[in-house]
Image (cartoon, rainbow, N blue to C red; front, side):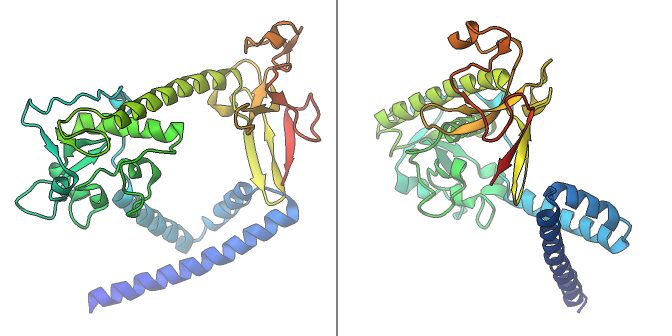
Length: 326
């Protein structure tokens, strides 16, 4: 009876909370559209006002604890920067009791059989995760990885049968680097017990051409990441805020997380291959920092003459803030 009563009380609190959230969402949308101010400003103001209410404070605590519990249940164990390293494709299956598994054999190690430990594979490398059955055991958050090579799902988060596959075709640079990070994590945290003879290793446990191709793509992605890091230092990202009518972008001496002596002005930085752009803060005085030939020949204009830059529509060339119309 007590358990049922608590369930009813929780359901009542949830119903009231959801109704309140719906009403609050309508109110915020109306204010934003009517007065052309940002969502975050309205929420902050409303939060300060409602903090006077004991019910509001208790509801916030209840929601926060519920969200924390849910996140702890579904989040994959965190990766740390010191785990990151290049992937060595060679696995000596003749040493240390390592084995070559077929996909069918690996399936028997999915944690559902008391007689067999729980294994998973990523990029064809098989790891013993039996010591963390609270993550990988039957009914747990990451059981879908057990007993198979689901490399793709580690970065896409697609846990359907179509997503729980080994293929990395079509993945972006960031997604490939994420897989590299996960392999490094498992190398550090879990025993490597062998390889699966499928896409990335053959029946003798030797790397396939597919694995060689993937690792080459990972290295290319790594070089791209390094180039992006250099670009961020030269052209730091803008600050930005958006509402229903558009928004604005602007520059400061700390925008994009890059502290510097100059703020700069907003410009579109065009990626020439895709023709996509992002907002970049561009040094607009003195010598440039990009090293482009067009910049070297200009005088006292910073990097404004860089060929990959464009002005935002209807924005003054000297303004450090530009309005974006949706």
